[in-house]
Picture: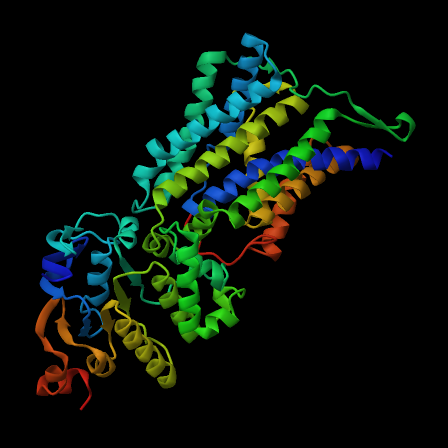
Length: 236
Length: 294
């Protein structure tokens, strides 16, 4: 059984249908990429999965539990973390306080301390700047903080929304390396990206979205070699 | 010596404004709404304390505690019944208008129960006045207790927000509700907690205000409420130290204007100062740039 199973999802913004009946699944240990142009509905899907939006139709099942109607604040405790688009770190709080917020639903201090050490080890720059206000960090550092904050909940699956957006090419590579190493450390990854090339390169499987529908799906390497994908998303 | 005495009285009155302003500013910071019924919660706190003192002639401290509990519950109920259903309404004006409605509702319910005549409030401060400098400087016990309460509240609140999980959750919600939810924070619960704290503080402010100015009517809360709102804007709405500084500055300006310029013009001067501050610094003394919703 899939770890995360989305079935016939339909989401509306008022009268406008943003997601028009989407089904897909994420298996444990995979990196799944959702790729597509701006406005295809990628972010809407992630927001619906973590409860920030509610679907009109369809179901979302995580580890056998129906979470379609679970409120957003109860999702992270189930083992699903979401790194939102645009980082959305708490700018007026320190790096350390942001990371502590990531562990909000956990109560064991020793275990939180261990996770914090792991996060600092993965992102040494966050430890260097732990007392700095998050709003004063650079874009790349804020992205690392957003990822570190999500990892603080010790998730079994992590949803990442456009982690490479607005970053320099060097930082983009760094971020994708980190995603890969998070995956290798045992966390399942659902990745939403406009940078289709990079997203397909690290993914196991991918789904291609166009205006609220999945138009193509399959093995990421195969999609990379597909002519229509090359033309539309890889700029070749 | 009289200037010193006016200053102390100003700080004392300002402390009351500051405690009320905390409620305004916290609720604005977290729920992004102006709770214009906040001033009337003060008045309810005053009536509750008075009723307890008159009916049971207990220790005044008990009366204060009862007032805090009643106002805390009142704050939670108002938020749950009147404001929460409108959260996410198409226009932020809806909740603003509702707040004004709640304000009138509270005033009129109290009017119905206690009648329109002002009641004389018994001070809850059981200490004698302090005479300094050979009797030339007389500081009332109420003044001292008010200023001391304000300091204690400020320290307690700052500690609560910076050191506790619930306090950090409040900060997170005030910055980004969506991201806060992704952390596992219950936004509705946090907003309710904010209303509870703000209303509990309003009860304390009510009792302190009525102890210094011992006349209580259903409209007692409205003017201090508006001035505390001014103080919150003056200091930078959403900022807790801003509310504190704004309140005290406002109290001092008001008392000094009454003493040296004109007691009729004092309120006008207070509002004129606000206008000048907002012209020079639209976000208030300690305010940050915020997206204005109302």
